[in-house]
Amino acid sequence: MNLASTQFTLKNKNYEIYLAGCSAKPHCEDCHNPELWDFNVGTPIDDTTYKLIDEKVKSFDKLIDSISLMGGEPLDQDIEELKELLEHLKSLNKTLWLFTRYDLDEVPKDVLMYFDYVKCGRYYPDKKSNHTEYGVTLATSNQHIYKRGKDYT
Image (cartoon, rainbow, N blue to C red):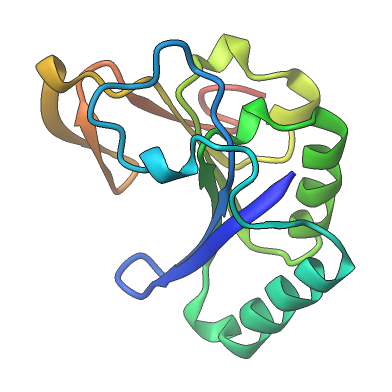
């Protein structure tokens, strides 16, 4: 599993982690990150990666309320490696978000349990809507955000 990049968004007080690789067939038309379809982009996640994430989150602790896992497609990664990353992210005591093209019932339960919010749904250019759920503007009408404890357990 490779880390493609990270980014901090001050407006949302969110630290975004982008994983490389998406196995969708076909890929979403007008994908936001087509450069992340390749699983070989970026660098392998290892102890150095964890230290980098820790340093960024701790350095900007008061500015970071949440961490979002994005891609590529996080759920197309090796599940055991993904769960190891999620276990580490959970230890940082931030709200965790998953952004995935999958529907909620397709997210493995042993992965779902780590997230406080899950944004689900493929991007379809013909379904543009820009509706907002839980403070996030979604690009298409088929996309939804689910909150743990309210929408799933």
